[in-house]
Length: 368
Image (cartoon, rainbow, N blue to C red; front, side, top):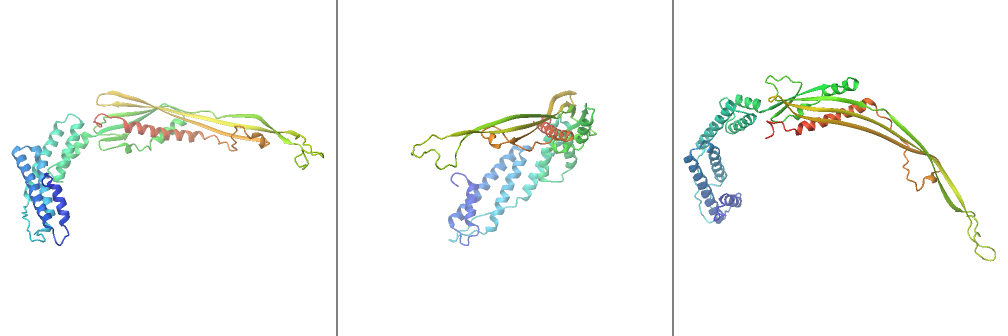
């Protein structure tokens, strides 16, 4: 591992072989010493190079390198002094990196703060505000309270979020329409919210909305109850032996076999089939307006159809007549559903359909 330059891997492996061991193998003590020194040298050389570049974008990297140095050292300190069972003493020098860490954190925070401030003051779109938010989170990684970072974060969220106002338009002037409107009031549009997208139902946002979604209810209709009754007869003819209880049947006194005598038996049944149907339909559309561009983005049709079908099949007469026939017996024919229940079912399905459409819609300024 050492010869191939895998110093971190060599450090981890050697450390695992030494922790908790009373008698420490010399080869692992030597390997840990070399891995520690070599890994540190690589990190310090990288820090020196980045400092000479003097680029403010490198302070995150410098901080991480100092943190790696500090953490690596902290893991080996509990083993010091590190002496093998053969008396070999590892040459491990420790350094306090606290000042270097604070300096790198301060410079990195200043860089990210200035970037966030510039993007908020000069940003052209929501993506700039979202980028500003990311820089603010980088500042908070180092210092939770830094200058007016709370106010910058509030502004980045305000300018980066896409705000959508939901309204509806009712074109059905009957009790079904009122049922739809009354039910929509309780729809949890807030469940569609994510980090950079907020939905309001008839909201009144001080800064205005980026989009307006109009739910236009065009039609709510429940059809008539239709019942169709069908009667038909079925029969089956079966041949049976005429004298099936006569032990001597088929043979006379001269032991001459007589032919079997059969007769036909007819089974009859009257079948009654009842079919009930009832349909309902709800038609709506989503009109999505881009308020900043004052344009109609898209119209999305929504149509919900409910088709009830009930069936029963009964018979009177001989059950044997049904054998071999494609008849599905069912004594229980479902009752027609209530009109209001069908409307409620359609409203629920419409809610799911609308939520799905809005959840997958590419609101510009949100999905990049």
